[in-house]
Image 1 (cartoon, chains in turn brown, cyan):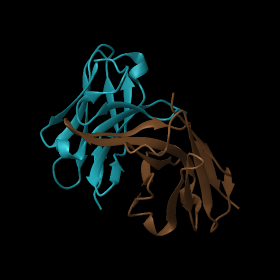
Image 2 (cartoon, chains in turn brown, green):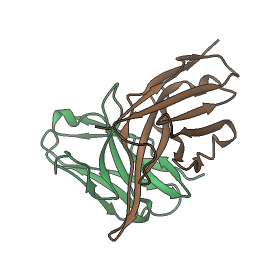
Image 3 (cartoon, rainbow over the protein chains, first blue to last red):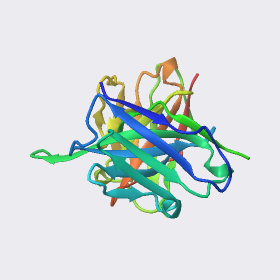
Image 4 (tube, helix red, strand yellow):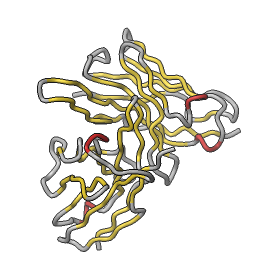
Length: 127
Length: 110
């Protein structure tokens, strides 16, 4: 059974950089059928897609956050990571990592966004 | 920037039918956006219900169905149950690897 687990500091100071890692178990991050991404949810608010990455290193960013985010992948460790710079209190949220299935076969394209999720980790931005 | 719209809240009676929608601030939702629906209970990660407009995720009861209604994607719940009371989110694929979530609908069953 595929499992995703977020890890990283739960408290980050304003203006610093938030760093999170997602460890994938029960499956390979290097499979050609999957993309790996980050989604966040501020307390009491809705979901926001942050970024996604393919095992080859191709990256996709939310335009509203692009200037501050970097997503990377380490296939040797079956992990991918997020860095969000210059954080403010508005970046306080539960951060989820998730898998997207996307492939093409004789039936056409199959896209199942965020079909597996980590449990989420709360990151608070505060001095 | 494109905004994905959902009703902030909705109410349904037990056993009743409710249709939640997912639209665009500009333009119409089509199957090309791969509309996907999630259910989220408090303190839990979202759970995918419907992919690609109308494909149920594994284990999702057939009380949940997806469609395109007019210019929006729709999630219909028939025979609403008490444990359907939670938040529902849609996400649309905008192309170029970009996904946009709707603001979510809080469903009350009473």
